[in-house]
Image 1 (cartoon, one colour):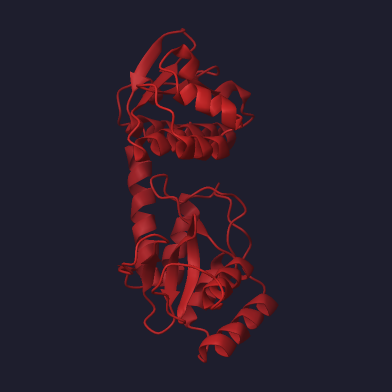
Image 2 (tube, helix red, strand yellow):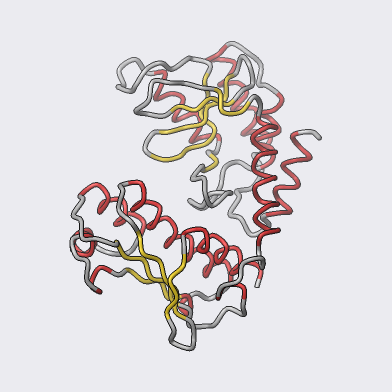
Length: 276
């Protein structure tokens, strides 16, 4: 199966995803000239197919909920590339001239395309190891396609509230199991939510009911917005886990009963919102 075919199937699996339009011919020509100017090579066909598929994305969502990779558009890709090529900028070596950033994880972390080999290399801003993550763009696309297919198959297989009809006033709660003040974690949660930084710090410092953060799905106007609210709750819980803060997750239905759930259940709930 070719790269173009796999990317088309990804579109079919995530029709609601916030992809940007395909790059225009003039944009691809400009990009091709820049690659030739900087690296001295013609634009590899997989990159032409890649940006001809979608020129980045219009949201900060990730294709796979468990992976936080975002597609860069041509301008963003060149901007990140130029940053690494500027000898006056400070970043963790090694970085090769032929590594073109294609996907961003945030915090200056990228999957870069090796213009010489066509492989995708993981550039982690605080780790000098530069291992090959995928042998080719088609391998990355196949990984995403398989992940999306398995998620779709998993919907409706779990026997908790999320398998039932979604109540209009479903509320998701996330709170830390123990009080812990952690400034960096507080900043991350502040960026993920509409809560002020001081409010997040106060919640992380308390193990009372005051520590609970909640997302009310009835405020969402459509299934995609409901799914995004669940995704935000998942990202907050994931941020807590990354700092060894145990998240307590629960959901409340229209009956008023609160049920404790696990992290994976939020992923299923997010998909349920999209398919219900």
